[in-house]
Length: 408
Image (cartoon, rainbow, N blue to C red):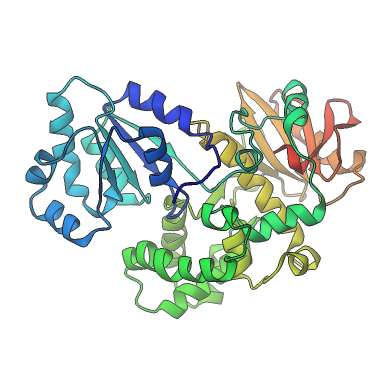
């Protein structure tokens, strides 16, 4: 299916294809990987998908013959199903001098990335796609990655649309998969029910060898209820009824598949008072809302998880702003043993930029008071912001502004 939404990553795809023999685009199922590559590649490239069981069997049975029969340049979809192709792709690209002959997509998994690293080192450029970002939805696909520098905040404000609390929570509830965005959530329940049973169970549960589907679904629901919280493996293991080792394995695979993001705490050798436990965020808030039983946006906005879901949404949008510009986000959170916390720190060129996330339209200086505790890190602290429901940039303190959620 084609979408009329311009994707930020399109320009990076062409750059990477020009620079590398092979392009690999990873990301969860249904975020539009194939659609994006087909749009960028137009009709100049042949296409095969390893979702096709006959083609998959042929690739597994005779990888050399499979590669030899391809019409180059080619797009191979869901390449993780035939990791034995990678050595033969290497041989094929080493024979030719032209870059960008192979475009691959994959729902990222450990073995696939290990095989890519071993077989295609130095030959492959890897990009990561997530669901449609707010910037892409608003027609701001050319926006730079989010950074709370005043000149960038002012630039975003010129083109971004101010959103009300109700509008934001509709987007949070709806999620960011292209199918639900383009239909504005009218297929919400059917989409997410199918997504869990078809993709998560097939790509993740089957990969892990989980036999009890009810237990794995319970695990998904339990971690969804803990989005934006510290990851306490022992508590999750107790509630699910499996071992802590199993929980770590399951979460690692969800992270590798792009379903969740594990945010690490910022710490240095200068202080031992910082906690070292990470936080977990779902990359799609619609999936998280479905798993936790919030069946419409208004109930979600009034419910007990509204703060956690808003934080999950904002963190996810900031992560997407980097991934879709072909960059790995250098982001952290701060929390010390006195429970002083800063929701997000972006590290850029040796400077830390602090961010707080608040569900308020009337922020004040108290909302950024935790920024002062960052002085103990002995790092340069840049311009900070409080992301909330103001309509325009509002100065809160020296070097801190309130920023509209709509400017993400």
